[in-house]
Length: 343
Image 1 (tube, rainbow, N blue to C red):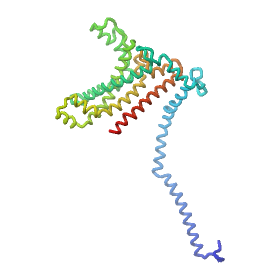
Image 2: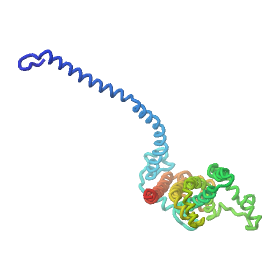
Image 3: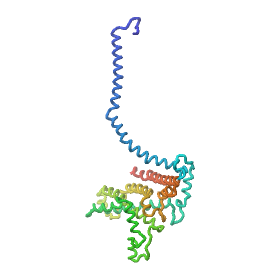
């Protein structure tokens, strides 16, 4: 023990030193014990449970969404076909050649009014189909917002095209449009003497595109109807009463009250339906197979990948489709959502 002033420390000093050392040691041990207890606290167990529950979903998203997306981007810059499919990660890098090949492909670019190309056909189909969907949905919502008997049954009937399997609906439409006299449409037109011979409606350029647009609007108008109807039921009824007292007719009430109240809902529906319609594959494939002027970008991607086995061009066309959708999203975020925030 250290000497102080040439004299040994007093017994009291030694006792104080020992007590301080014990307190410091006890404090350090208590701190470690508290940390161990906190690590096993309810909050820590909840955090570990949250990560455990999220892990399966994260693995699925990584394996089925993120990895295929980045892999498609990688393929679009490489030469990938049946010849090197077993060693795809060593495929030669070709830069933008696949994109140039897609842009120069006769099925992609505009040729004539009857063969507009996949890009222009996709734009026409998506915008007209979306506008028709919203228009029919708005009309149906306005009708179902009025009180009448069997309104609930009418809503259920209107939902049928949206909830029914697309395969069964598409084959019913093909049967109705069958070019044989047994087809319902041809039979009715022949009976009414409006046509002399049966018409192959789905095999005529122009008519085929018009039919799939009508099919798109008829099949998905129920989605727009539900969204618009929910907003209509939340509109303050006193606005209509005040407008009626001021002498506004039905059209003026619709134009100056109903539409302004629905503008944000219609904007959201338009964006969602536009994206979904731009990605639409099954409806067109089941009705026309992409032929007779109905080849859109998803059908073209399928043809490149699984008919011609040009997986690199298929990936490039899918990336072009993605870029177009991102442009739609940016436009919506910058203009539509900005107006919502300002309102």
